[in-house]
Amino acid sequence: MNAKTAILFCAVALAAGRPDNHPAPAGYGYEEPQHPLSYHAPEKHDKGMPFDFEYAVKDDYKGVDFGHDSNSDGNLVTGKYYVALPDGRTQIVTYTADHYNGYQAEVTYEGEAQYPEPKPYQPAPSYETPAPTYEEPKALYGAPDH
View 1 (cartoon, rainbow, N blue to C red):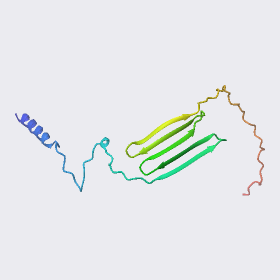
View 2: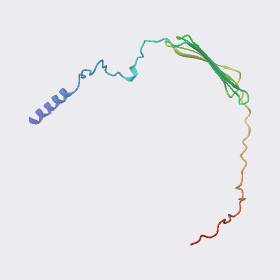
View 3: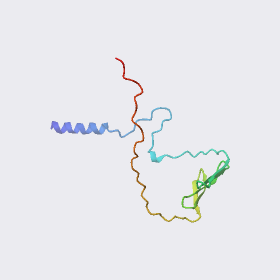
C-alpha cells in the first residue's frame, strides 16, 4: 500500500510541477518572442529619395558590353540592365520595384545564340627537363686561418 501511495504522490507532484501557464512577461513592453516564420514587416513606409542614374561599359577588343539605367520618383523604381552573353545574344532585364509589389522583372534576349564548331583535342606539347648551363662554383677566398 505504501508503494502505491508513493507513486500516487509522485504523479501528483509531477503534474503540479508542469508549467501549463507561462510566467508573466518581465521588463518594460516585453513581448514574448514569436515563431521566426511568423514575422510581419511593419506597415509603415517612408518615401524614398528620387534618383536617376545610368552607366555602360563597352570594350570591343575584350567583347565586354553591359550597362544599367534606373530612376525613381521616391515610390516606384523602374530600370533596365543588359549584358552581352558569350553565345552572342544580349540579355535585357526590365524591372519595376516598389514597397507593395516588390521586385518584378521581365527578361528578354536579343540575337540568336551561336556556338562555334568544337575543335579536336590537341594534347599540350611535352617538354624535357633542360640541361643545366651553369659552371661549377669557384672559391673566392682562401682557407680560413686557425
